[in-house]
Length: 104
Image 1 (cartoon, helix red, strand yellow):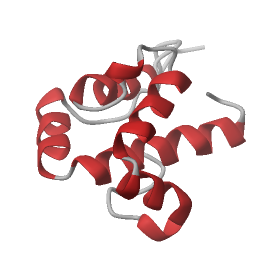
Image 2 (spheres, helix red, strand yellow):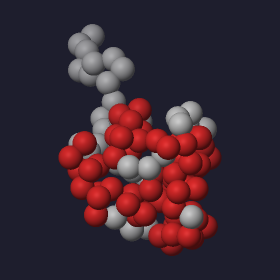
Image 3 (cartoon, helix red, strand yellow):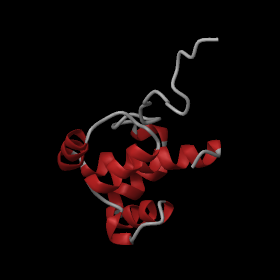
């Protein structure tokens, strides 16, 4: 029998929601808009990181790497710089969905 795939290798996926999919979770959207720093602390808590680490490019890159989500550090930097609230809400929606699916 020929091996066609390397064991343990998974194709990169994408975030489960788009960057601007605000209507997928209006609660998270409002949370991010009205209390951006609190949402960052919530993300950091979910990922067992310091509350100060919940916002920005590094946490997004760590999350992408952990769940094999396609992208790059450059793209993470651009997304977080251009639309930090959108990027943070997208990350929180993805975490919440993975929790519901039992894969977080």
